[in-house]
Amino acid sequence: YMPTMKHLKSSSIREKIYRARRTIASTGDHDNIPVILRTLELKARQAQLLGFKTVAEKSLASKMARSVEEVDELTRLLRDSSYTAGKRELTSVQAFAHENGFEGDLALWDVNFWLERQSEVLYSFKEEELRPYFALPAVLEGLFTLIERLFGVSIKAADGEAEVWQEDVRFFKIYDGADHIASFFLDPYSRPENKKGGAWMAQCQGASKVLGHKPVAYLVCNGSPPVEGVPSLMSFRDVETLFHET
Image (cartoon, rainbow, N blue to C red; front, top):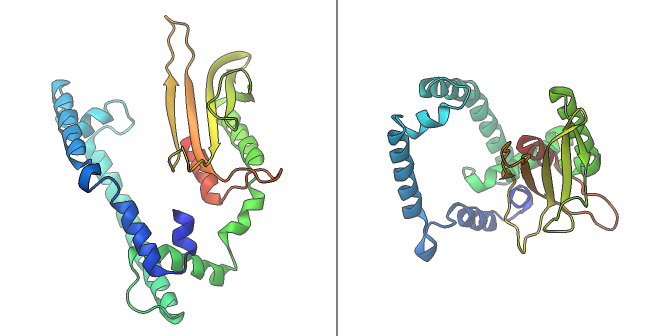
């Protein structure tokens, strides 16, 4: 989606893609708004049964922030700190677009396209040119080294030691010294025919001393697959996403 919004020249087609994405599962037989509203209602009821005033208060019971008010204050500080800079950047890209033939105000589906063009002119920079510096094997090596430095654990490939659902899926084990403490699957590549977009990490087996289970998670991304022996080359955004999900 994002490469399309950055590089597709037709504003009208970008608009169609933008609107289609923003209205997924919101009309006709596929409208899931009633399901969402019912889910919110049940979550609120669950929070009240557990002695909390709101779902947010229940969520924070296991998190670092001590209150909903603290979260609201941090959000306000971030908003106040970034709003002026964001407005200045939008004004700049609007002027750049006008200088290059765009008429009217930039719509939401125009902003990323013109930001990309402006970056190319101002910084002689194209995001795609970074890909050769971020081959997936090198990125994983850097990620695992950082994790080892931060948390004192090591990550080792264990491909073939667990059944996988697709041949490109990797399997890794996490060690604290010589002790195996956890594992995870890495499903790194896009498969549009049977895999949804985006990236996520989730638990597929929880830890249990009673059952003798070690935790197992799966980390799913949608990067470009290798081509003719060349490893997957990641955009900087792909790298950010991988680090974020890990």
